[in-house]
Image 1 (cartoon, rainbow, N blue to C red):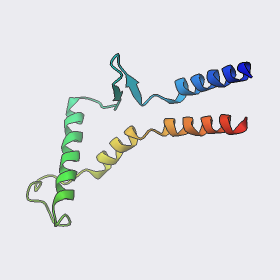
Image 2 (image 1 turned 135 degrees about the horizontal axis):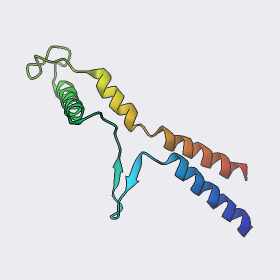
Image 3 (image 1 turned 120 degrees about the vertical axis):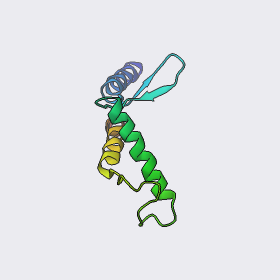
Length: 105
């Protein structure tokens, strides 16, 4: 039984190494999510779009043109691309693999 548990743990370590890559931990145990950007300008644009989206969402008449954002419409595609970058699909795949290993026993 101990050998089987060791194999299971080794399988879990391999799966974790393969799939858990959205968050990286530092020495303090804090985790960081990595987002790929071309440069600081793209980062600035992304942050600006997220802020504009929040402003429009908070306004009562969000369907009308915002007075705060009258010159630049919200780039919804950019916001959704960032959400996709942050979405932990690999981790969900890991959970599926772990479930299959554990249920298969």
